[in-house]
Length: 141
Image (tube, rainbow, N blue to C red; front, side, top):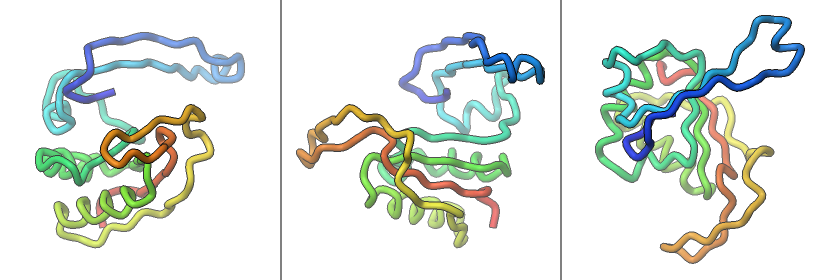
């Protein structure tokens, strides 16, 4: 995981028998930095997929540089949000930053979202973490 609010952490998780037989591994790393800083750091590893949890790309202007770095990865991008209106805000922000009309291949309710309800302190609405899912094949048009 990558984000300025995270603490550095890494771990190797056990995988199922089938994955073990196919030499699959699950490594977990946290890096306390912005994504565009991560891709130019010595810790960088080329991703095969990128997932953004509770993504509010439209909310902070510093996301522009990271959105451009995400496009350069040329891999699938999955974003989750807590409210459906955040999906369109994220798409509009990505299109504005990249100056193109890249579109998601899927916008749906995430079947694997959290089941515990939370209350949004700004709107007072109840939400479930990662409730809505957007999938881009890539941010390249």
